[in-house]
Image (cartoon, rainbow, N blue to C red; front, side):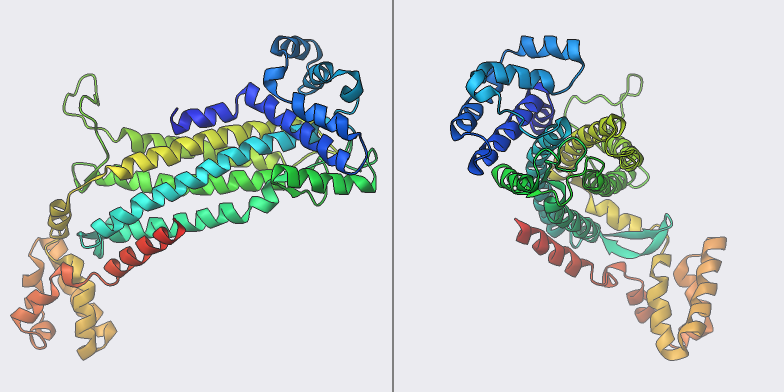
Length: 438
């Protein structure tokens, strides 16, 4: 089973039912520890709270009849537990206590797998950063050549951002993965003060934390998780779009994996399309579109409202599914990315040396002052751009250039590989930072 299939399985109806059963069993064990229900009842409930022990047909028929998402499951569990234990199922709880906590059990399963995949992606990117740390290419701002950079530097930028996402997901765990046991309106009227301890014990059973205020209208923790997924998706989309752009023939600097036999067009046999990058960009856009709905889902009326529960459930399920596709496709792309350093170096020369204007300005500034140096190099650069005169000739027409530098010094200052700043350092540093997380 591949990783995408695993996520689909996490959110199947059967897995959701099992999560509800796990929460009911944790509730029973917790209440038994407090002597609220008999230990024997908790043992029986735990023993039978497996979907394999229940009659799915009975549950589905009752779902159709009642339209209720949980009661048919409780009825069936009550049936298999028998009269002595069955009467203690769901003691003091309300539906949302079980369904929301159960849904978060499944999200946590996704979360743990997702964190592993982020680390795998960081591992792949760290190797790529080291491999390409010296691959010089044009740094581009506003779509235009700026100063030289390296491809490894680009990767380092992405690694830095992804590391912060990893920490965001780790840091949100105690806020997101919480157990709720507030009863019908979140007031704990059905369980009293001992219900707070029950909720705490349930949290320990489930590997969660205890919800500080078990109100059914609170959904900021659920929305926070979707917002974090959306930010990860935005970074992934930025990475994919960069590969998409650099794969264009006009750039020709990289190429995503294109398997033998892949067909890019029914009419144009030459096509080698960035299909995986396009998928990521589209999935990420869809995921970000779920953020407004998750924010709307926080607007719950009075003490509970099914409307907002429906909204957040849809947003969580789809966000996790899309994120899984995004992270696995990213791993696939960067594990076998084709990089063309010769084309990168060739692209550096497209402007005939204009990309080195800053270097020349700064060196001249040491002699004339920065602003005067800027004006001199600006005149030469604009003259070259407008007339097509090569940049070195335009520089040699500037008396203040020739008075301060000989031709050998000018040629040296026009070498882009000598003006890479800390690109190599950043690639090495953030590759090491990624490895630390592993």
